[in-house]
Image 1 (spheres, rainbow, N blue to C red):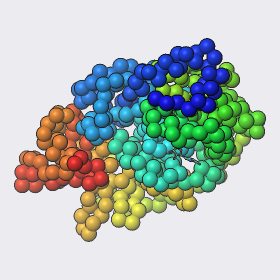
Image 2 (image 1 turned 135 degrees about the vertical axis):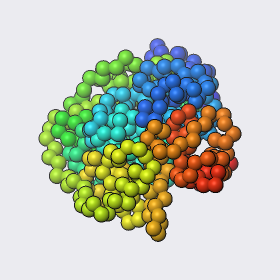
Image 3 (image 1 turned 30 degrees about the vertical axis):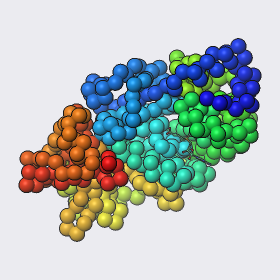
Length: 440
Ligand code: SAM
């Protein structure tokens, strides 16, 4: 691996005596990991569905090293949303953010969704996770990942940070800025990124990071928490960005980070993870807003009358044994389940609020893939359950019909975890696995 000379010189100045260990890390393979999705499965189930060694990682209670994992995206456990494939130390910023069920949490730079799905797992479906991504195609990937992991209490938007945070001023208990950066911590994992790095990259990124942080600050309520993170090593993009922000914002104070992993940053307050600490590399700082920030955000207007919500309720009750545990809504022909907590959404680039239940087509309703992904097998009135290696499951993921003795909409599960659905009649299950997700 050919590393840029300027990068190496700077790292030597930064790390001093540890530079040798840092350099040596490039002769070893990058850390591979998975993060279990507690919304859909437990460790026993994941171990049954994913036949590779999983070794606990220190950055999150749900994080594991998985050195033998190959092509995770093609595995049925992945399709069922049992895990998110993630470099282990990438879980560190959300552990520091420490989101709780029932809170309002903003992930401002969220795609493809590693940290947003981790936040969702910790919120256990309660409260509101607002996941924003400014680049449209990346926002679509974010949406798909949140759906795969069965998240139902999220809003997904594609909005410029300034506009979004002005619109939601003072609204959030916790805000994560996992900022776009020069990616120095990704060189081992994605060597093609080395070519995109230039000596000027850290300074250019730092300017953008300062602008994003300025916006993010608006969205934090008084007493709320702001976590800033990057996956790069340069001081310029890390401690220096935070120091400049704190100089200009006396209404924020740094908070100590009480974790076992990594090491203190160069300011003694932030936290760093280096390749010598068991992860590819991450930086994080935790701040609290101590100054007031009145919130004038209007609540979402839930004026949905009983008659309008009846088809959504009927659909839900025809598929699942328990009553819906979320407010219902309708957007044109689409039926939705909304998060319990929701602000007015206009002008904020919202791609989806809550979860799609289904779509009215003439006088019938077609259920949505995301609805089944967010439910447990035990809730489904009808389900087929397969082992990960079952050829029928592979056929289902290719979009083929499979045998099924039942009649009507039926969940398809892997080791007891929902992965999709189909409509059964005449001994066959007509496939409803989304075309864009099918395997070749
Ligand atoms: N948090 C994500 C995760 O864990 O999967 C990774 C986020 S990545 C480090 C940074 C994101 O910021 C990218 O998706 C990028 O498209 C987005 N971004 C780029 N420029 C931006 C800007 N000016 N404002 C906000 N976000 C930006």
